[in-house]
Image 1 (cartoon, rainbow, N blue to C red):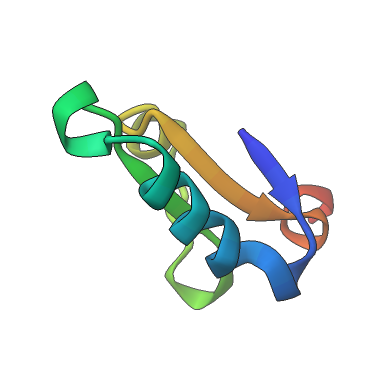
Image 2 (image 1 turned 180 degrees about the horizontal axis):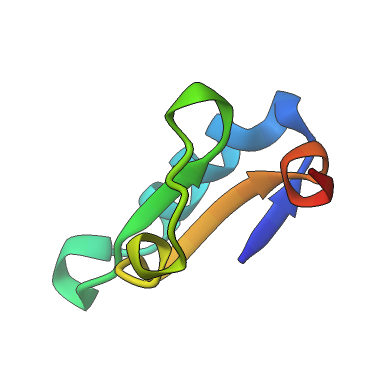
Length: 59
């Protein structure tokens, strides 16, 4: 779980994808934020890395 400011959310996703060979390592990245948020923990558990914001975590 990576918690970051909203302004950096997608940049951090790109950084993970750029610095880690996600496909070869089998690592999946998910952005948990906005209207498309998954509501179930079982959905989030499918991902290796979940990025979210301070506001989403607090709500």
